[in-house]
Length: 78
Image (tube, rainbow, N blue to C red; front, side, top):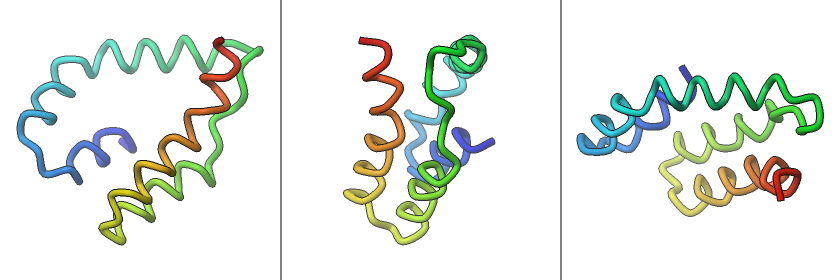
């Protein structure tokens, strides 16, 4: 629901269609990543920071919050 809400908040029909096309693959990837004990847990506060920036209509803040959310996982995947 979180990821769909982020896509919907973009008000971008092309992004919405693209997400709809890839949603099943995204869910499967997330499920697989969540099963890996060697990866850090997604941080609720980091997700909340993304949502809060979107609700403030702060695209730069949302982009930075999304990077902050994903960076720990990206670091562990390297």
